[in-house]
Length: 366
Image 1 (cartoon, rainbow, N blue to C red):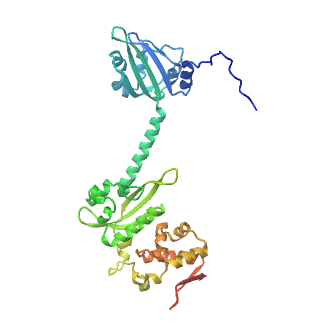
Image 2: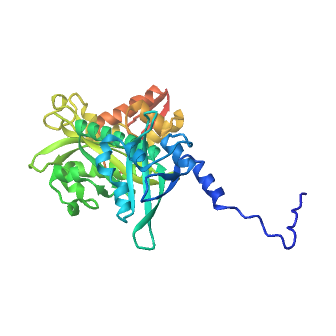
Image 3: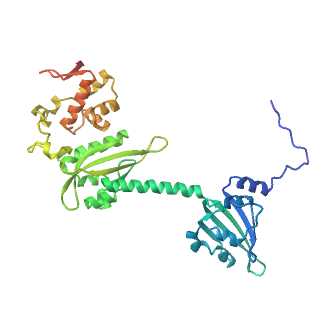
């Protein structure tokens, strides 16, 4: 085991000079320092500043040369820096420079003034940071933001942000669409703008998504500010923190032109019931339980070994929809075409559904 050697008695520990710390900081290549007599033109620059400016450390650096390096588009706003310092005022500026090799860098310049015995500014001290990486990252972020805004503007009527618990947060476009105020849409108030016949189904779809942290996708009619109900497809997804918890929800409401109840095309619906044309009477809502029961779906998934994600993909429905279908306490009836899609997917996986008079619905291997 290695033992530490005690310091000799009476011998002070070796001091680390500020020059060592300065070199350590400057070796990052992101910071440089200068000092100068403000009554002259020449300034003393650290190796880090020469590195940022792309200059040979053996060359002489002057205020005039430094100002000439400022980007032409920024020179009008920032070419007065030495004059400001000579007036006794500190500066903090961010601007672009063009180096001798014609590369462009963003720099942040902080400088202070030291007054002489006569109270007149005599010395200047400055620090320059290379902030190009931060600017590049910000520009990239702004570009992504602009692309998203352009896509939303082209495809959606509403872009919304909800809190982690599912309550509204930022919904200015919803307010513009419906005419609701910020106070009116809080909590579950936004549902007041949804058609009464669609509210229970919409509420169930949203609460299921929030409770299970799953994507949200449903259609409903919205009472627009002009007094007309219009169909929209609402889609959303959770934004997660690193620990897997929900930070917020984001989503869109997409216009659905020419759609009738539950998103079916008006040309394919029964005018009297709004259910898809050709749907057998046994598959209508009054007898929907004969089509497929929650217990049958759960048992069929167990028999086939299909997960909810796998069954949802096969049936082309959302996982939140499957959660409702498997919940016997759910008060929301699902669309017959949804139940048929789930049934066909399970039958394709090797399950046969049994409906016998006087007996509970069951399943068996096909």
